Length: 137
Image (tube, rainbow, N blue to C red; front, side, top):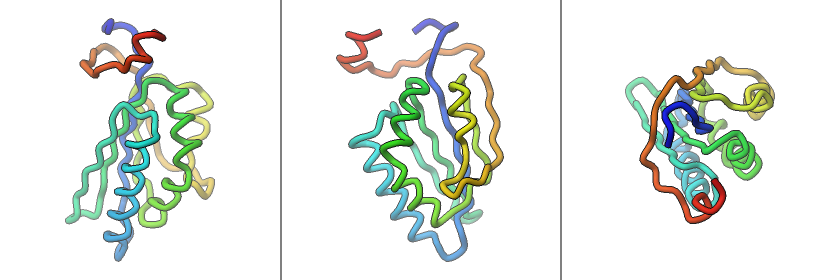
């Protein structure tokens, strides 16, 4: 991969888990990640939890904005389930998503939440590509 061009987009979502909802949050996240693993377009999904502070951090890596649109279309019920147990404290976008992606960043109920967008400066990755990716650069 060239260090000057990349369409990959990384999301970092910091969620505050609602008091009394830790077990429900864990179940909902496990179901959402399992669904994404089986059907989602993400290149990577990782979720970390800080029980002491009741925070969770989700990282999702996408090939491009089209992959984000696909994820949102497929995963909406799972996202809604997770959001029953938490609120978005802060959302960070690393990369250059299309304008409609940024405009659509709202909770399932339609409210906005705080987010930042940091354009890519330089980098590389060593993620394996699928056979399809090799055929369609």
